[in-house]
Length: 418
Ligand SMILES: *[C@@H]1O[C@H](CO)[C@@H](O)[C@H](O)[C@H]1NC(C)=O
Image: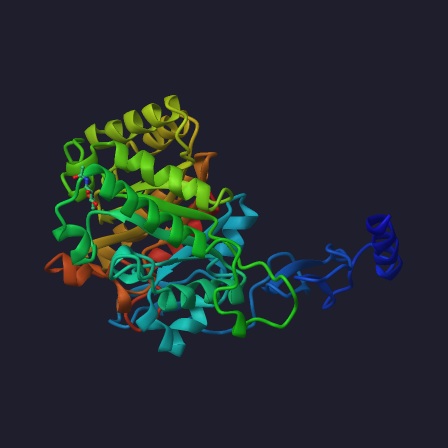
């Protein structure tokens, strides 16, 4: 039979596999059929999707000296003193899937920034801050543009980082054809289904820019590990947000979007993402009620994104209790957009409180078994969204505007070690 003949030939060409690779040897990558474990004293570290290498020491720091600890920040205030050079490596050692960061296309020409961003010991996951949103991906009905989203998907793949799809259905950053059309239910349902299935389908298992990949056959494009399918569906009082989707379809738009996403990529974890659901309260209760009703109806839902755009000194004391209550419903959670802003100007005391607040949030995720990972909403004040959104506030990230680590970095390290 043709099939068994081919199989016998295939077996004959597979090399004899030795047990372990020596230090500096290859231990993985697409097409690699050799050993995937390393001799003692070294560990297998992903360099890129095509090459993993046995490096001395377990989770040892990369040789890059970009952004080392500095006892003072750019303003002469206290800085970071931690000698840990890999937040993601530490998060994985401690049992989480990743510590990652949001990024945005205009930032990718800044090589001082990308030197830190591209280091998968530091960041194991990327979220595109803008370029997979509806206005970016379907600016005209049925006309899709993926160039910028692909740039970040490709970057994650090249760097050996996970990708979070962000986002499919949200009241904000919509093209005017969505917001200005007088929809009926049938028409808007079809528009949601086309948008979600096309965008999620595009990033599922397809080389997004095949000219950037080696010419091996059938290379898998790295699908997003998770998608924020529905973003920010609630008002702060726990009622559903009035927008074109809810006003036309009621809650059913959420089910429509989740079903379309599952059909388009059965392997991606499907999330609903929101803010002000970090601690207990009416908005978290509303989210939990939604999750329960979706589960009861058999709608695919895998996780709740806890955005965590927080304020220095105001991390909710009920965060762990709240995350445990959400995961008890049979979903995972992730910290998806962490930053902790302060009223400017920054002071040594504010930086110290911010360090403590970062530690609290990260240690909370560490303490909750089904909190799978943590994403910073960009890692440097240079590219933070905060100053342009919240007047008089800023300095929300663990690296300052000159890419120097702040005490908040040490807070993350301490949180990961808890
Ligand atoms: C609903 O809207 C679509 C266009 O989106 C239109 O073709 C259809 O005729 C409308 N149906 C009704 C019942 O008005």
